[in-house]
Length: 401
Image (cartoon, rainbow, N blue to C red; front, side, top):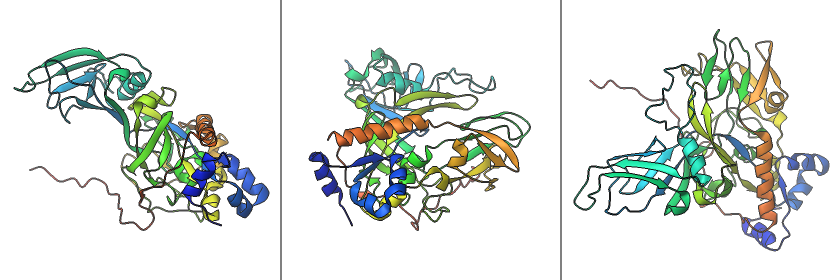
């Protein structure tokens, strides 16, 4: 039995496609087996809603009168610096950007109340954003100062462009030290006081296609409440890691770069987020449809939380020192139970990723497909998979003298 994306799209157009979420498919396969299910099901939808650094947005504000060249100058959006080095009136703001006067961690732990991710959320929400910019002036772009309000509805282009999202599996963070530490994995209490993780597990997009057989460059996705596309492998994309017999990576592996029209998105699925003692980021909603092209692909989507394992890592010493030490492995079934065992001790768990919102994304994408509002796309190129020449290395530091 084999299907094609074109055949599935034809069934979607005719209202005959059978679509289920990655949560629903697990019980269906248990009840009727993989072979029969693969024949009946056409699409499995996935979802994740998690803090995702390496996110940002670019936009074109339109020319001023007289004209002004922002490139080479300075630009601020609600006092948060935006990158103006592209050209005259193109700007980019990153989710981690902070106002110049933010105290950071000078008052420890820093609160990081407002940053680039919050600007993106407010822009998507239709709020007016204060733009202040300075330039050096040229004969063709003489203006040197701009202070104005901008609104997403008035921008020529507004695009979400995230260079590393939807990590395929990730660390479980703990703290072996005798003090509380503040990390991008949240607050970690001393002496194994808690364990934080950040994945939707069985609903997570790349865990449902571990070898990227259907997900590739050009795949259409749910992004921020609108429609987006996979633009490229995400930075640090690394398929060459340890895997279980079911193909699922046992540590951080693949990632994707995504792009989409910011004007279609909503603040429900793009949320500016403050991480105490760490910084600002953006919580992003992503959902990817998995076309059931074969029984093999169907089996990948039927893997449940008890079959997905993640490494437990000490964020007080091993992680910041770039040591490859792992304290053990636990399943997402264990993580979602509320406690795991580390070094013989019971440790409470919490997730930075919202599973209920991941279910909502997968369900929304399912409804879009069933309603004929969302057609699948054939990737124009695959993501690098196992045995590719990718080799993720740390920075090779060299003295400047």
